[in-house]
Length: 499
Ligand SMILES: [Zn+2]
Image 1 (cartoon, rainbow, N blue to C red):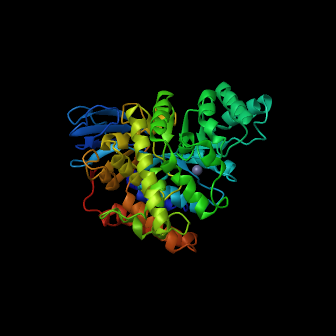
Image 2 (tube, rainbow, N blue to C red; image 1 turned 90 degrees about the vertical axis):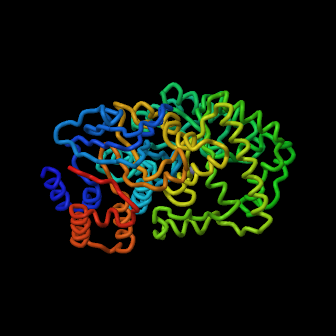
C-alpha cells in the first residue's frame, strides 16, 4: 500500500507525473530484490546464472547466487528468470543543450530507455551553466534520465598563462565540474598550461583528436606528455602516418564535401606499419580512446535498423536522424573510399585493443540518442572484439575511463544500482543489448516501453497544458497499476513483478 500511496501522491504533481508513473515505484524506501536472472557483473568473473541482487536505497547490498542474499523484510521482489542483467551503458560523448530544456530532456530520456544510465557532456558551447545544473539534478534516482558528467572546454583566454589556468581549474573543481577537454586546437602553450593546472587541481583532462592541420602531428605526443588521459575521435591518427606534404596541400575548400571526405580518407594514405606503431604506443601510454565508430560508419553506408529492434524507430527524432546521416552529397566514389577507410580504422583499433588499449563508447550525437551506443558495440564486435569486450567498452571500461568506477560500471556490492535487464544474452550476440526489458537507476526500476510511450505523448502533443498533462499521467499510472498494459505491449515478454 505504501507504494500505491506514493504513486498517488506523484500523480497530484505536474512535471514529475510521467517519471513517477512509469517507474514501478517512486519510492526508494523499499528494498528491491531481482532474482533468477543471469548476472553479468562486468568484473571479469563468470556470469552468475540464477543470480540474486539486493538493492537498498540506491546501492547494491548483495550480489550472488539465488540461494545467497536474504531478502530484506518488505522488499519488492522481481522474478528475472530467463533474463540477463548487465551494468548500465555509458555514452561518453554527448552535446546536450539544456538551454533548450525540453529537447535536451527528451534526448536524455531516449538514451535512458535504451539502457544508457551515464553520459558525459563533451563540452558544449553556450550551455555550460545549464548543463552543470542538469548534472546535479540528474543524479537523483527518481529522474528517468542518465547521470551526467560535464566537461569544461579549454579556451585560450582562460588558460593563456599559468596563473589564469590555475585559477580556472580551481574554479571548475569548486563548481563540481569533473572534466576538462581540449576541443579545437589551441596553441601548444595553452595545452601545456591547461594540463598542468588540471593536474594540480586534480581535474582530469582529455582531448578531441580532430584536426588535420600539420600541427596535429605533434598534438598527440604533446598531449600525452602533458598528462592527457584519453582522446575522442580518431581523425588526428592518420595524419601521424602520412607524408607531411599530404597535409600541406589538402584538396577543396575548408568545410567542403571534398575536404571532409579527404580528411576521413587520409587513412588510405597512411603507412599501415606506422599506424600499428601509433596504436601500440597509445596503448602503452594508457590513454583511452573513444573511436566513434558508428559515426564513421555512417560515412561509408546508411544506417539500417536491425530487425526486431525495440520500436524506437517510430519516433521522428530517431527516424530522421537514422535517415539523414552526415550532411554531404555522397557519390558512389565517396562511399567506396569511406568504406575502405573504415576498414583501416578497424585494423588500427584492433591493434590498439590487442596491445591492451582501452576502448570506450561515445556518440558525439551521431545517429540517434542511445541507439548509437548499441550500434557502437555491434561495430566493435565486427572489429574483432568479443561481445564481452564490446560490452565492457560500454560499461566497465567506460566507467573507469570516466573516473567513476568506485560507484558505477560493474555490478558489485556497494556500488550504485544502475543496471539494464535484457531479454537475450549479450555475450552470445551483442545485439541482444537492444532487447531491453527494464532499466534500473539508483535502485529504481523503470519500464522502457512506458517511457517510450510518454515520449510519444510529449512529441505528439506539445501544447499539452497542466490539466491535460495530469490526465496523461493518470492514464499512464492506471496502466502501470493495472496489467502494466502500456508497459509491455510492445515486448515479446517482460519481467514478472510480484510485491
Ligand atoms: Zn563532440
